[in-house]
Image (cartoon, rainbow, N blue to C red):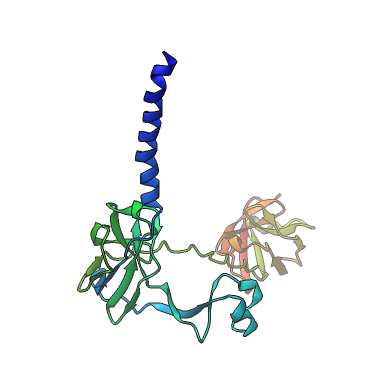
Length: 271
């Protein structure tokens, strides 16, 4: 039974190799002829700025010896004044076919030139998509096909939508340094119902939780009551005045640096 089935297995293996082996050989063959696109280009309805480019040379041993490039750049394309290859850096057009991405096509005076050449025939039948700056996709597109010679497509207009508006970078708004208010100084007279002002009575000023240093009286007058809350939020707040713990009927608004003379405070029911 095994002897009879062996030719069938061998035939199946040969057929599988013929199918899949030939497909790999086809895909790994010489690169297909490229397609060169050229024509006008617009982005968001307007002509884009010219591409930013540089000239490059391929760094090999001869060019290292000639000091046209550095030894550390062996095997690389590097910028050079005697370069023989123009490379696009910004405002470029790219052609994509599957995983393949072309070199940047160059724009000048509203016209572009782009070469699309995938490395092997395995890309045949795939969609060709055009990108501007690798961000927006053109309205136009086609299928990559194998050609017997280089395919020149002139007058191939590319129309791209407008570039997306970049998200503004948040900036840190500097927090203004709080300004400590200047002291306010009050001097004036005290009036008490019945004219009774106890000896040793102390006058203080309060703004919220802040209480000034107390000062004594000279008869019915007071001098240099200093209000110094050292808090920017105190500016504009009401100042309350207390004599021997009794609240004055008179209030004032705290003003930074205020100097007031002749300020009169009236009190009732001072013990």
